[in-house]
Length: 377
Ligand SMILES: Cc1cc2nc3c(=O)[nH]c(=O)nc-3n(C[C@H](O)[C@H](O)[C@H](O)COP(=O)(O)OP(=O)(O)OC[C@H]3O[C@@H](n4cnc5c(N)ncnc54)[C@H](O)[C@@H]3O)c2cc1C
Image 1 (cartoon, rainbow, N blue to C red):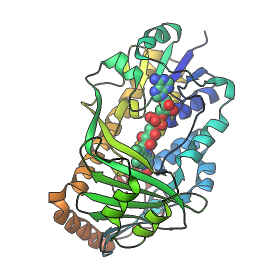
Image 2 (cartoon, helix red, strand yellow; image 1 turned 90 degrees about the vertical axis):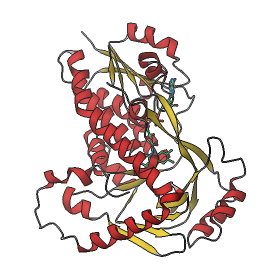
Image 3 (cartoon, rainbow, N blue to C red; image 1 turned 30 degrees about the vertical axis):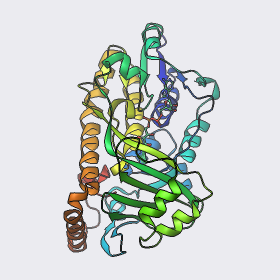
């Protein structure tokens, strides 16, 4: 009997999952609400665990070639003083891989371009009320429908929902050749800069504001809040005057889910464990989820067992990353903790300069902590 799988949501996790299933000859259909699968947004840091997931679906090398490898991450104060330089390149010595920065647009295009067009039904929103019929028609329904997941709501109710973190971000992408990723800290706000591919620089500016408080005049606000900061902040802001500036309320899922599985429905990515952007891990975890679920479903055994195996493999690690991201966000953006934050980052920078380098041929299996990217971005 052919196993039929519906994937709700053609974003990063949904497309990766569909690709993993299709490559193993399972019958998969993606339902995407947008008429076109678009990739507006930020540059995404792909950490080694996500690159390995992309390798498993044959896209790792193309992502490494398209994106920009990240060697170092700097943390500075708004007056320009460097607090810490993190040698991200150490990951390569441990795992054989450097994190890669790639724009969301490019990543979605690579995923989308590898999947046969007839497997994706665009302009097909799935409402919570439709999920029951979908579950009756298909053997498995994968909820990959992101922040406001209809599948999550249908299976777990509205109690588990996105909550506002207390901060929102302006985001832009401008032509520029910044080579080093950096985060520059002020009181209750920070400014992040990362290279993206092809001469583009991505910036993001999270600010502590009440929900909906960002206003609709980003340039005035950005000039007010960051105009007297160290380079390259003011110049990136000025270069954004004619570019699109996006705003995001940063949210996380609370309370967290007791399971990612409900009958024959299963959640991946933001639908399962929406997290704040502080560790740059949401898309990475969505990719790892999608590929892991594809592997378990393609195992050929009992479907309920496969879904439970996926839940056992992915739920706790993904939820731990979500918790770590939220704690880091509170720590770096709470105004009362600015001084402690700067001292802590300064001390971490000093310690990392004295940390012994791993010997050649060190066991890569011991790299799991930094492998998830949790220590660095
Ligand atoms: C400012 C910012 C910076 C970030 N930086 C990073 C980073 O550096 N690294 C990183 O790994 N992550 C980062 N992230 C997080 C990352 O963007 C998300 O975690 C990731 O996109 C989640 O993937 P997903 O597939 O779960 O959801 P999405 O990519 O959001 O895809 C969901 C898809 O489902 C569709 N959909 C929604 N509802 C329905 C419906 N009812 N019916 C049908 N289709 C539907 C949507 O149109 C969309 O195509 C960042 C996020 C933000 C906000």
